[in-house]
Length: 459
Image: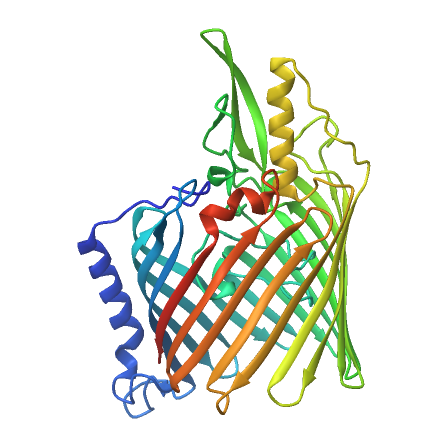
């Protein structure tokens, strides 16, 4: 199975069917009298219900297929094929707050393994008290105003191995407590992260030497000392939006830690496990419009707690920055273009040794730098997203791309979607990764590069 933490325990189909049926009946029972796909009240005063309580049930059904090249072979294979049912429930209590939950049921094959999963993507409750807003529960947080690449986005984890035409499906949730204080044009946001949740890193598809053994991770426990804290001050004016932010806690993306050395028949085995590290992140972003152009920028300085000169799994401090613009050319064409840079402080080149012990340490340090995107002291990249609609806006074509001038890595995600009807969509596209063999994108190319087809019905 590809990626640490990606393996999910299979449940019996009978249990899944029972759980899904109960949830669907629980969510939708109050709605049948008014129509399943419309907002509805739970009752009236005559029937003992609450006229201020309303429900809304939405979702989609989709079938998706990914096909690509067999690693190391001149053949093609089915990378992924699955069917998915997704339910989204919104509950509103007028004058007090609301709640949201999203449940996904997926069945099929992925990375040559059968998948049968029920996932609660998000489930949280909002409570509004004067100038304060509170949100508690399983939720996804997206920080930053740049397109696709957000240096300040360090709150909730991601899974870049997810097979989906929807970029948002790569985001994972965590249990959070969020508070906003509204005093327009300033909005103060505070987030407490009680428990650590790790991103999925592509360890199983990055080539590892035979003497490196990858073991299960041991992440921080529920001790309050391991919780994280984030704060952001938003400025929202008609002419410009912006924010400054600070994060103090464990990075959702772990590194690879040398847990122990083992000797087997004269050979040295490096026992390695994913390990989280704490960091400070100070960030800022902005978005404004000048004439017909929109301009955006985002900056973040990251500094780890641990001694990065002694531990390879801890990255160097770095400064990441994004500057870009977006422009609409008539009613049907748009373009987003961004420059992305990274400067690594105290950077030192890795020097390969011929000594067996040092060779293993070199390989492990090299993998950690690939994962942390710190193989060079300074990197320069661009990202672009041109899009155009056709046929009275029923056909949409776009390409998300990135090219790193320093490492010569490239990523392309072309996509064409056609609205057969208002709620019936067909999509074709692809994911293409390329780069030198020793680079991250060069390593994952034959595993993740693929073409896909999807058909979806929304309700």
